[in-house]
Every structure is written in C-alpha cells, then in structure tokens.
Length: 169
Image 1: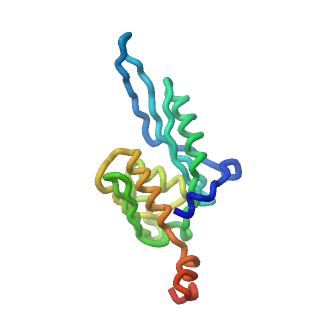
Image 2: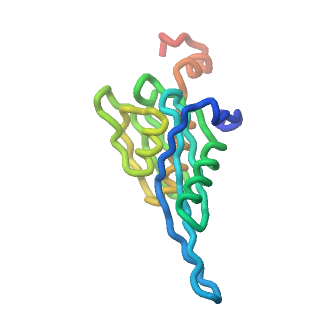
Image 3: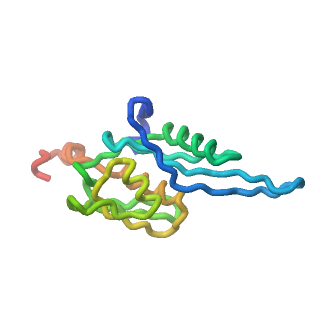
C-alpha cells in the first residue's frame, strides 16, 4: 500500500474518464418517491500508468458522473507495468470479490469483463488475462482490481529487496 500514501496531482496527467455503472436509487418518503442516481467512474492516463476510481450521487445523472470524476481524481494510483502488460500474476481481494490478473503475450488484448476492462484500459494495459471471481457487484470488483494493481512490483524494487542484480531475476 505504499503507492496510496503519496498523493498524485490530477492536473499533471491527461486523464480520460469512463463510466462503469449508473444506479437509480429510489427512497420512499411520505410525499412519494425520491429518485436519485449513483455513478461509478474510473479515470486514468494510459501513457503514464495512472488510474483512479470514484463514486458520485446526485438527483441527475450528469451531476452524479461529474461528482464521481472529482472523487476519482482524488485517489489516483501509479501502477507498475512492463511495456504493454503487467509484470506478474496477482490476485486482488475486496469483500467477496476477487480479481485475478495474468500477464499476456503481445497481441492478446484485454480479456476482461465490464468493470475490470474499464480499469485495465484506463491504466494503459494492452495485453492481460483477467478473471473476476465471487461477486459481480461493480464497486467490489473495481476495489479488488485496484487491490491487485497496488500489489504489482517492478523488477528493480524486487532485485533491491532480495539483494541481487536485475539480470539475476
């Protein structure tokens, strides 16, 4: 979780947003039903390997999306990637959701479902195999995907931790 400590400035990245899910919520009150919308949004810069997610709630969809984007920009994460894929296999967990990410050879593409695909394309991964296990709830799936991405280590840090040269790994 060392990546989450250092805050990333959203203004220095070319962020693209992607709406993952929009949920219509109804609250029954004395006068009738109050409708509102909840939006789950992923923002990312594919060139620099930065991604974030956020949730926004409002009476109208565009305002909910705008709030979600603002929330997503506040919790950006820098991800360790190799050229077009991830460095190693990793399993992310959140609640009852689990997401398995596997590196894939060039030309494979992003093999992923809705919520995981949004995160992978936003962070700039072009070749990856994924499997979403457990819940299909997009909130938990995205949080599990972020847990997996934060666990990724690059060869330089692993070599230093083991006291070896990068070529020995």
